[in-house]
Length: 115
Image: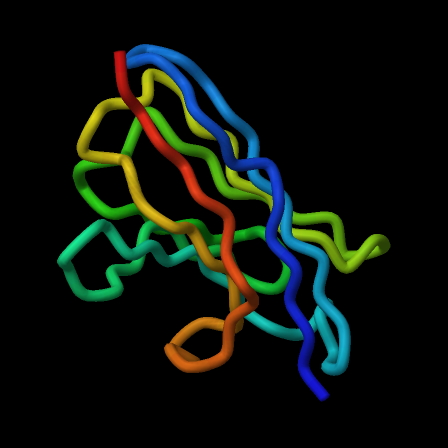
């Protein structure tokens, strides 16, 4: 079974930073493109950042480009999302998963940006 466990969320003031982690199991992590997606209150799921299996390619939603960095450690089956200069619009539950597998995600981790 595919298992994904996201962590690292919390409450942060605008302009603050957080680093999310995702531990994956049940599939070949090192050969999978991965992504972070998020769901803001009252809104649909939306992709945030994508990374290829070998880290050679990364893609970002326009609104987070330059503020977020996606990375991975294939030896640890772990995906990361470094988030800097957080803004109130970044408030959401964040999930990780294999790229394009919208229904394959863990419990998520809540990120709340508020003063």
